[in-house]
Length: 196
Image (tube, rainbow, N blue to C red; front, side, top):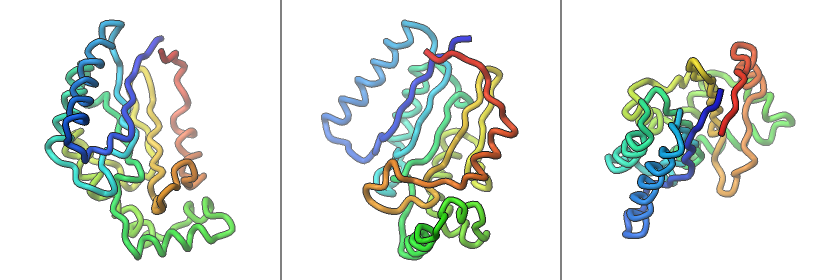
């Protein structure tokens, strides 16, 4: 089986100057051209839709809806995860994260967070969760940091690396709890596909 997908990342939807607006319009035209080579099966939006915890406004929803229309897919084939710019930062959150990172095994500590601590960290993504619901029409499963969206032809592992995202320049050094991540594979063995 062959699958084709489009990935958008680091949109940082905060600029509305001429060059940015032109680029967005050209991207939509480009996506329409891509479809001439064959159908696109799904869309991955891999974080940083907002910029520095900024708002999710009507324009970003319109832009993403225009991309979905250009691809000619339904929202069930859109997969969306937050990036480190899709959350609100604050002093309490920073103190909690610093404590986790000072631990001798921060990844293990993430696996054993008390509910109150987890809620302090995950609440920073509440604006993203609201956007997710408004855009996709379904709730983000915030009780499961990582989750799988399945279709008949593929599984998408949604890995949320933003729980302890807090510092500038941390890209490439984000941590996840190993147990939570490993548990995904127990329940969802990989499907054999070829991605073009």
